Image (cartoon, rainbow, N blue to C red; front, side, top):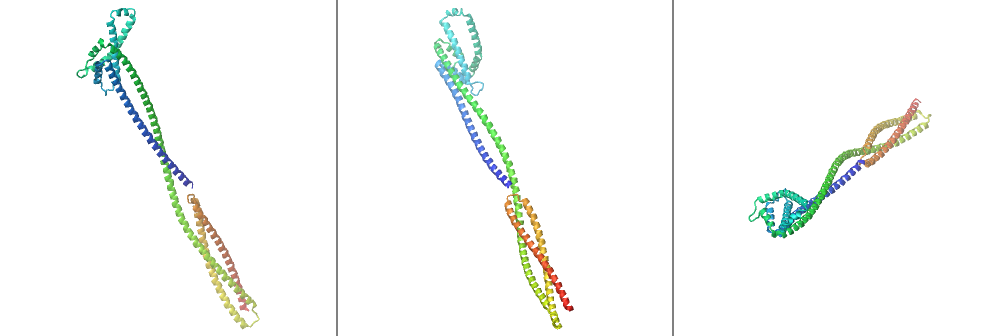
Length: 442
């Protein structure tokens, strides 16, 4: 019974593990699909934002150049568009726009100083006399700015040395056109607009940084989800391993149960055979009991006849005539011979019945011993599912064995009684023989 309960528990645990595995697989697929969709959306959104920012920067820079510097600034952006390679990872639109803006601011400052010098040529020395230190500082700053602008100028020179379309202006022509006094007011407005666009670019850069931070957070979440998925997959692998172990145990227990059931089936067949043998023995015992009853009736009748013969012998008058005595003696001898023959027949019959019953007793004792051995074996084996049925069958066989014991005891008692009666008959025969001898002598 314990093995059967363990099998049921294992089957239930197996079903629970299968349901949990299916649920985990379903959740794993849902999480994976969600993460992939979210990743594709974020990548698409990031690409759109980058494209939008680059387009806005180019558009604003072009609009600003068209509004402030007119055809000269458009020419600068034409040069930038011609010589800018989007596939080059080292050069970006931000770098080119920043360098161009720095160049424009530097040129606007130089133009402002030149304009002031042209308007007030006499005031410049008197203005710089009291602040020589400041002029030296400004000169140093100008040298530093020139040194900083050297790589930008080199980069612009490299860009200008590439193939240019027909009708485009060189950098020197652009600078000369910017240096004209008629464009001074436009340069001031352009400087203001450049600072405004730079502020807008800073804001856009901050937004881009925010988006990048969001992307970083999302990447962290992706990594966390990936680790969680890996942990769940490892747990799934462990559960599958446990499931395989339990399945192997279940198969072993099932094979043991099948072998035990086959053995129990064989035991049932043997028990059925023993039942049939027991039924045959009970029929034989009943027949022998009927024979005993008949023999007891016959013996009782013979005893009554013997008692009558005794009475007759006792009532015989010894004083009768010899002829009558001889005839009576002859009659008595005939009767005695008949009785002796009948007694011999009964003795033979008793011996035969005794032998038959002794053989029956031996067979029954052997069968009882075999049944007891089989019952002990069955009691030792029957610790499985069919224990109740076997206990019922054992109880039935125990009842049969008790009945057989009782019948055997009855048979043994009857045998003892018949032996006693046989001894009495032998004693009576001896008495009759002595009486006959006395009659023959008399």
